[in-house]
Length: 81
Image (cartoon, rainbow, N blue to C red; front, side):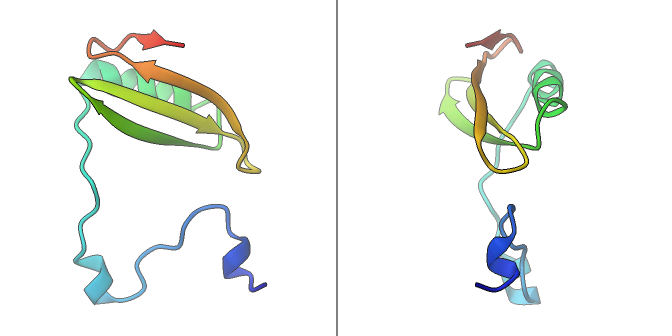
């Protein structure tokens, strides 16, 4: 297995053509962004899923890629387990 395959995070764009491909967009209120920053400060990386109606599902992972937490960020920025 190559070193690239061992990387924890997905590889970025490889050429200018791929850099023109836009990914999904996620809109966060300032309060939601602060809550997300607080969650992200305690882990290696996070995955965010837009659940509609302003709700965001956030999964936190450690450096080995193991999920350590799953929370919902409410439209008002509050957190729910």
